[in-house]
Length: 356
Ligand SMILES: Cc1cc2nc3c(=O)[nH]c(=O)nc-3n(C[C@H](O)[C@H](O)[C@H](O)COP(=O)(O)O)c2cc1C
Image (cartoon, rainbow, N blue to C red; front, top):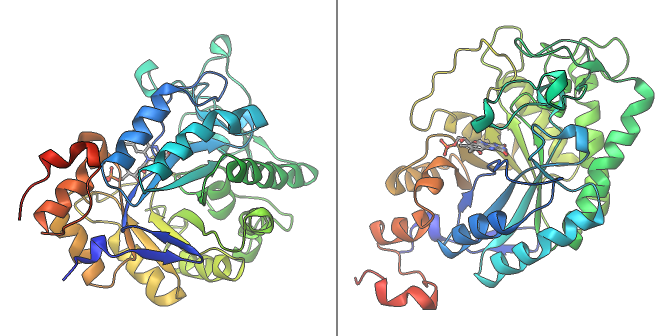
């Protein structure tokens, strides 16, 4: 019997060859937001390595929505053109090219990790960050609170970036609502203190994120899936939590989302996160069960048997692998061997395929 990890996944009209997703991972390797050889080799290697879906990193919909000056962006057609060879290559390997659209909100304007990762100083090219309210993240400089009149342009930036993602050849789009970035800033009561219709009650805090999903869905073809990554909890009293996540997931489903990618944290600098193997899987399970929508589980999923068990337990429809995939781009091929799944290998590598 084929292990569940290697059973194809159908989302809308798209068939994904297996249920191992490469989780989006910032590479901080662009100039002016443009993809380059690094992105081709990095993402391409993981398609060669057997993943079902390969998701490009958080991709900024506006220049000031970048975490760092080296982030990937999609705010012009030139950016889409730079991504096209990458989606072509991923598809040619039999994998599904996906992209995460993002705005870093109050966590923008930082140095890349290997340049220290801190908020940029004015002399280092810092820019003013944007958020629902002027509440800072940890010791970061306070963001500027967005005016009500500025919000439609943000929604439009996500819509336009989605259209460009489509032109670049991506088949799955994911909206980033997690990890303390802009849309998460709107969702969480810890970062949203607005008194207009975009703050206060849950339906108000969810208004901008839902407007973004509606706008993206309006240009994303009916046959192609839309994913949303959320932080299912802020791990902090008075913050965003699983109950609100379930309600949000129901609304996201109504708005045309097909899968919730269930991460956590990133909004409160002092949150205590009990990270251990599979620690976010219960969120994927609860949202799948209570909101009736497909989920991806992510976070310290490193072993083939562990990943298979998550699917066998009905806790998620797919697993997203991040650091284990950096350690081993061929993680899916190795998982197939461990689980005795006879999957096709890249023909160029067939002579190294384990025998059964
Ligand atoms: C180098 C690196 C970059 C990351 N960049 C992103 C990103 O762009 N978008 C995102 O949603 N998560 C990002 N993450 C989080 C991962 O997608 C993933 O959720 C997290 O690492 C937990 O999974 P893991 O235990 O398999 O590494 C990043 C993680 C790493 C290690």
